[in-house]
Image 1 (cartoon, rainbow, N blue to C red):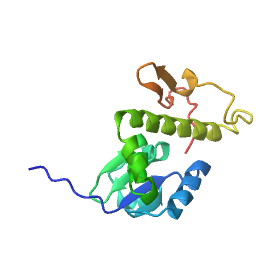
Image 2: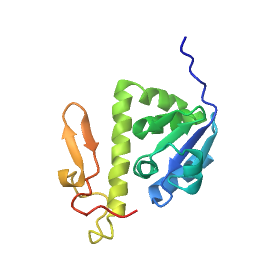
Image 3: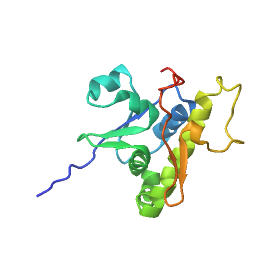
Length: 164
């Protein structure tokens, strides 16, 4: 028999250096919660101590949520489980967990990643800002007609990766 552990608490790892992530952290704190959320900066000493098996570099690139029984959620699934924990947003989480909703959740996560990328490169590209630019393969974006936009950060082989 396969028993599934109930989720009684979730830890949300967020990038404390990202203004969007900090805004969402503050928004989450104000929401009535059905499942308590602990908000911990990604790759912090606390995160490393509590979750030694995680790739903490990856938690800076993509939202990561950990359940109290060791469940790990990343990307769109992390957003859905976080919304599921909120009293007023649980119905939305259920809609986003459907196949059609999953595409919408993925799109929202990709839009957030694009915004974060624009903010991270703001100083390096002479003031590049959100909007007015298309998705570019050189930036790590690709489009598939069946699954939509996807993002894979460019490799560091050419030495152009931003330092952490």
